[in-house]
Amino acid sequence: MKSVLVVLAMLLSVEPAFAQAPATAQANEETHVGKAFWPGVMLAIAGSTVAILGGTALKSADYTSGNTPLSAFPQCEAMKSNPVYARNDCDLLKGPNLKIVWSGVGAAAAGVTLMAIGSSHSRVEVGPRSARFVYRRTF
Image 1 (cartoon, rainbow, N blue to C red):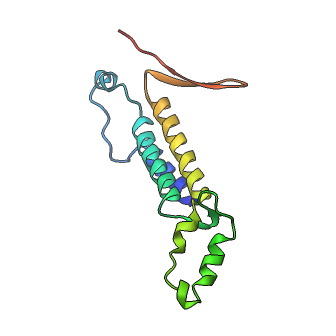
Image 2 (image 1 turned 135 degrees about the horizontal axis):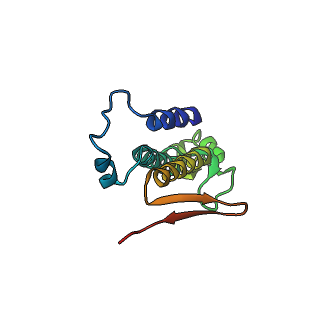
Image 3 (image 1 turned 120 degrees about the horizontal axis):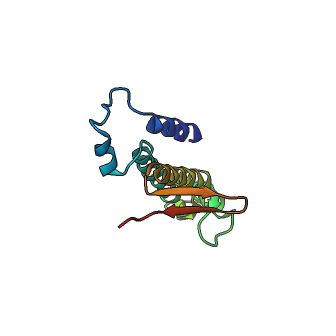
């Protein structure tokens, strides 16, 4: 999954080979968007989607949902051999796939950072103990 996200990030951050340059510098100033802005938007959307899927549709038996014990899912699956419990729905006991969720969160954060770098009105400042997002508004 990480390799897919890395390849997606590389593809979205590279300037297209057949893209045309803006006719004038004035056209670029009117949009207030740099090269990294739109790839950042796409990466943030993709990362958010992966994080949501990891918490909902792509659940894992390694983790549990809510306060259920870790052994609840294997016990439920073992009970299916009994005809009385054969129709148990054990998928409800699966928890979110944390590796996929946190990979998606990281990709979304990288996308938002690219958006901030690509915007002409904002920047990210990283200090020894903090990182801050600065947005400049002119009237």
